[in-house]
Image (cartoon, rainbow, N blue to C red; front, side):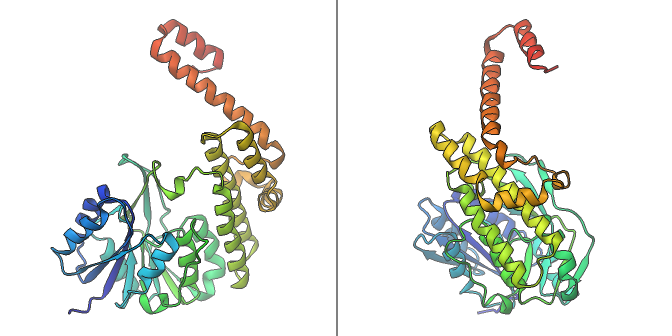
Length: 357
C-alpha cells in the first residue's frame, strides 16, 4: 500500500448532514499525496455510514469505528493511528478551499519548520459572510528564541485555539496527549503540548479554512450551568503551562486574564439565556463573580479593559448586570410582539420612548 506524505485526521460525531460537503472539499484538494483518517465517535446518526460510503470510493480513506468516547479520548485514539511524516486536521462540519493542504505543506517544507499555521475565517451557521478573519502577518518564521515575544500575540489571535489550519510533523505528535477533563479547549491543550517539541513555526496568510459556529449544537455554544467551570480548567492549564515553559511574561498574563474575563462574560450570557429558575441562575452567577480567577483577573486588568476590546462585568456588579439584561430582554420581546401587531404610529411612539430613532 502506498505510503503517503500526509494524514488528514477527522473525528466525526453526529454530523451526517455536513459530511458530503467535507468529502467534497477533500476530493477537490490540489495536494493529493494524503490519506484521510476518519474516526467515528459512536455516532447515533448516519455519520458512520456516510463515511464508509465515501471510503468505498477512495482507497486513501480509512474509517475507524469506535464506541462513544467523548472528545479527548477520541482524539487520543486518532493520534494512535498516525503513520505518515506529516499530519493535518479538519473538522467534518467545517469547509476549506482546494489549496488548504497544499499551502500548509509547501510552507512547512519551504521553511523547514515544525509547524505551519494559516489563517481561519469564521462563519455563523447558515451565513456565508464571515464575522471574523484572523489577522495577516505575511509569511513569517518564528524560531524558538522568539517564542517568548511572539506567543502572546498568537494566543490573543486564536492561533493556538484549534488543531486545524495547521500542518504538523507526526514524529513530534507522538507524545501529545489530551487529559480526560479537557472537554473544553482540548484543541488548545493539544497544540500547546505539541509546541514543547517545536523549534520553529511558519505563519502564512492563506485564508483556506472556514470554521462554522453551529449555535444549535456546538460545544462552544454550550449553555449549561457548568460552562464557566469548564473554561476555568482550560485557563488554569494556560497559567500552569506558560509558567512551566518560562513563557509567563506580563504580556502573556494580560492575554490569559483577558481570556478569563471573556470566559466569564460568555458564561454569564449563557446562564441568562438558559431555561432555569431565577434563583438557580443567580446562584450560578455568584459562583462566577466570586471565583478567585475571575476576581483576580479583573483586579489586575481593571485599568486596561479598553485594550481588551470587550465589555467586562465587575464582580461586585454581577447581579445588577443580570437584572438589567433580563429587563432589556423583556423589552425586546415586547417590542417584537408590538411590531407584529401594532399600527406604525404606536411603534414610532414606543421607539421614541425607548430612545430609538
